[in-house]
Length: 218
Image (cartoon, rainbow, N blue to C red; front, side, top):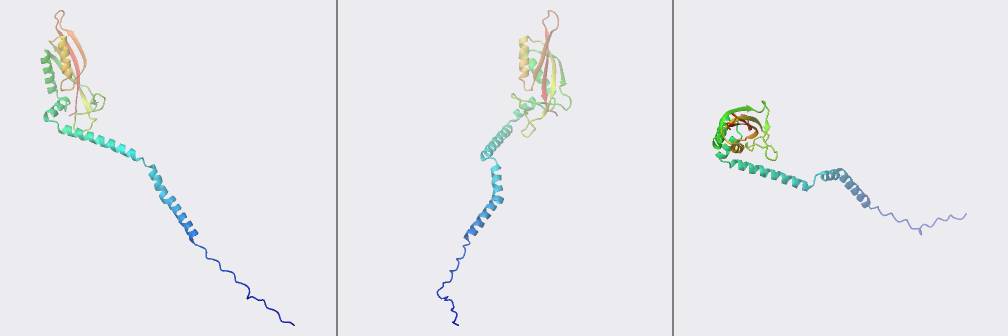
């Protein structure tokens, strides 16, 4: 029996070892995923909040408007502080605390004497029910008040009606009396005027005038 031949392995080469896989692709992928998640959950809400805020131009215009109003208030305060005692007294006469009938009567008597009339009858009546008031308004309809800057601009005032009868002057003097009354320190507005002849042929005429004025509740 012939001997078994063994395989000749010396001529065969062993397989080359595999190169290790690089970890960089996986690392880059993880970094990208982390950045996306961070933007979605952290930065995205902040970005949406910033986009929802008004533009800076709106803030600038609002701030400019507020500064302008503050400047006006400051100027009004300075003007009131600069008023002399005489100016404040005139303000008190124009819109007094309470009806201040003595001063009102003195003004009317002075106007009557200057224009050549005599007051033969004079009466006063409250024009408002208790607790009611009329806001004082300027030429353009804004509520105003000659009170201190810290006072409520919507302070309600009371109305006082003045009914008077005057005699002794001509029609031209009557117009002078009415003009002087409406230009007096006290705020007087004429609501009606009527005239009657005292006796036939005498030429003597009496005039009935109805004014209304305002005052602050005392």
